Length: 232
Image (cartoon, rainbow, N blue to C red; front, side, top):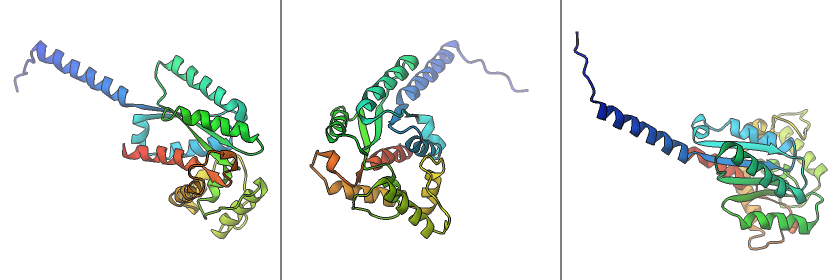
């Protein structure tokens, strides 16, 4: 029978300290993301599905919380900061990045521009994934490059046409669907959507009248940031 080796107490203590230090380092490297959406269902459903499809390893090093508020552009920034403060106070952690997700829709240009400007002023702690006119533009860019302004009804029509071309003959767009992320991954291309959105953004490079950037969406920036967590 092998003789049991007695480990000196000072070695045991040193090992315990090293384990504790590694645990602290792991916690300190964890990143915290808060995504606050103007809409209550459409945008949160998309980002929840994106989060759920990230590799498990990503969620071991990053915590991503998603809130749908139902608040309009004028009050969204204030509510987002309140949610951030509540999370930090109850958890004792610091939020690394706060993202606002909002649409231009019918909001006053001055309010829309002001909200975006205030977000960008706090970069890199805060950013804004805005769309002009609506979040559905991001969906369309998974299929084609669109550089003509359109109404909400036209977004719906074009989304349905694109899915039907892919073989979903009876597809009807449901605004608050929980399946959009899955459908877009299967029938569209996130890579194309990012490229198309960047191309639209370049059309307005250097211009800060965001209410007149139509069509345009910065959702691609948030999606890229989440996807790129895979390599960190």
